[in-house]
Each structure stands twice: as C-alpha cells, then as structure tokens.
Length: 457
Image (cartoon, rainbow, N blue to C red; front, side, top):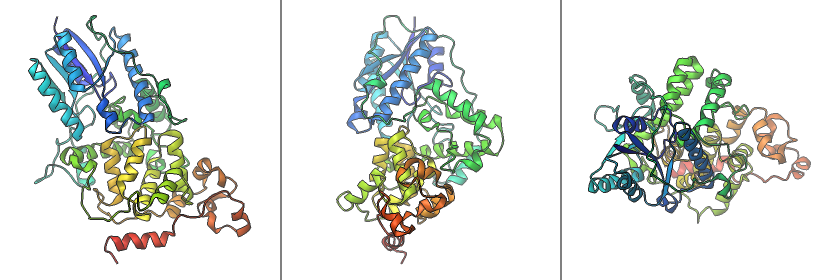
C-alpha cells in the first residue's frame, strides 16, 4: 500500500482542494495532517478570535473526512519536524500542500523540503489553491509583479481558470495513524462575543444564503455601513474554508453587476498575494518608502489608546472600532476610515494599526492586512497616496441616517440622523448630557500636519 501525506495549512476544506486530489491519485491511502505550529504563537499571531475560528474549521474538516471514511490527524510542534515524523511513520513518499507567499510560508516550505529529502520523500506544492490565479502567473513587461491594481485586474480577468476539484467521495487513511485531540473553541479565552462559527460547512452555507439575498445588490450596497450588505466571507477565505476559485466561478455563473463587483473584490485579494510574493518584506517595511517620521507608541500613546477603545470623539471611527471588539470583524469601508484616521489624521505609524488588527480580526492575515494598511497609509500601491478620508464626510455618505453609529455607540442613540456624526455641534446643554468624548483632534489641524510631513506645503 502506498501512502501520501496532505498537509493542510490555509486551505481547511475538502471542496476544490488540488493537493488532496493529487495525493489521492498518487497513493492508495492518504494522511490528512494539520500541525499546530508553535512558531505562529511565537510570532505573536495566535489571536484568540483566530484560534477559536481555527478550532471550528478543524472540527468541521475532521467531521467531513469522517463522513468519507477518513479523519484529520492533528499534531503539535515544529511543522517540518512533525511532517517528517509522520512521513516516516507511514512510509509516505510524497507530501502535498498549497504553496504560500509570505516569508514565513516560504521558510516553512524550504525547511520541509530539506527534511523530507533527507528521509527519501518529496514535497509537492500546488499553486492557485489559496488564490484564484497563482502569484506570478501574470506579470507586466519588465517587472515580476503588478504594482497597480487596474492593469492587473484586466490581465487577471483574461486568465483561463482551472475547473474546481470536487470533494472526494472517500478518503482512506492508514488505521495506524494517530493524532492529538482537536483543539476546542471552548478552551479559547477572550474571544469576541459576536464571533461567527468557522468551518467549510458554515462558510458554504453563508455564501449560498448571501448569494440568494445580497449578491445582486452588492455593487450598490457594499459600502453601506448600516446596510451591512458585504458577504462576510473573509474569515472563511483566510482559513481556506472556502475556495476563492469556486466563489469566482459561482458568482460569474450567477451574473449581474453585483457579481462582477464581488469578483473584482476577490481579484484584490489575488493582487495583494502577487505583491507579497514578489516583495515579502512589505509585511513589515514600506512597499514604497516615503521616509515618514511617523508618530510611535511613545509619541502618541493616549491617541492610540483612544483609537483602539473607540473613544476618539468621531462617531463613525468609534463605531467601527467597537464593532471590531465585539465581532472580531469590521466592515470594509469602516476599515478604510479607521486606518486613514490613525495614519493620516493622527499620523501614527501604520504598523501599529496593522498589529492591532492582527490581534483582533478573525480574518487578519499578513498579506491582506498589511498591504491594505499600506494602501491607506500611502506607502503601498494606492496611486493617490495623499488621499485623506474625512470621517465626518464619509460617515454622512455611507451612514446617512446614523444607524451604524447608533448601533455601536449607544451614547448617541438619541441623536437624530446625520447629526449623529457631529455631536460637538449640538447645543451646549444637550452636548453636556452626552457621555461621549470631545473630538481627539481638529480635522483641519490633522490634515495640515499630514500635508506638511509629506512635504506638500
């Protein structure tokens, strides 16, 4: 009997899983393996919300494998060491896994390839598992990646996509292989109270429910803060509980302008992956260095704390930060607003905001989180790096009746409609009765400081 190992990483699903399909074709039996990597915790990325969501994903994956006669084998320890040990135990000649793009993922693959080679086994990595189109599959003339989204989107849209793999009917696993107990969400402390359930089953149901109720209007409603018409699929994409390729295929088959706008957002995810693959240092360094003398934790401790706690005095910013604490998630438009406020109005280093998001977001990953923060901060791929989002203007535009603000900032529930975005303009007697802080900064002063720091005045 021949045996192959499938190492699951950010691809915790059975539908459209090329590494699993390849392993089943190559061997009589497979070992579906997930390694609880202490390196993730050591790097500070074991956020409670993601640990809880991961536990759900692993439980659902194990249940789906058991329905097919298999099971998930879980081990703890350094990934290369554990995979090497498993390969030796079962006599596997091949290990299959999805290719990654971050520096950590690449180092993991290099080390794993070396360890397996010493044991007479081969590592086989598979592209376009975590993304729709593999990073580097499309490049402009004279460069190894696209630095501007629109031309990338044009080329990306012209690519011939592979057909999604069906979930296997059976997954034969060697009876001698044993693992550790699955982690449990109940054992994770300090998770956000509104955190959704993880796993492929939950993700597929969420997508199909949203496809029926929200996809058609996505192009006109996705920026509405109160309407909350986004798909909320980002956590499932982050953990690979859903295939981005399948989503593109299904949305394209659905058709319409809403589906087109949704596919464009999925392309943004691929765009960031191809940037990170080409410039892995951009996870911590400016993609386009501007020599900003950012305010740091020491310079702006009180402002940073107020931002984190949703106590800046700007209602739409505070509502978004409180949503983050409660749900471990934030509306995409709100992410842009709070990031612009921190980096351009308060002029705080984008890495501080990116780190806080990674600590809180269930969908927080290095690629999209860091590059989105850089886009807003003006150090990334935005072709208008000096744009500043005014939280009052944006609030009135995307939450015109103040419903989003009143949902998350109960101190302002009695303030009518758009007036909720400028509580400091209320009559003095009414303002005095509000248990809500004054604005942290004058917006004009913040804008002037940013322009001066960028050498524009």
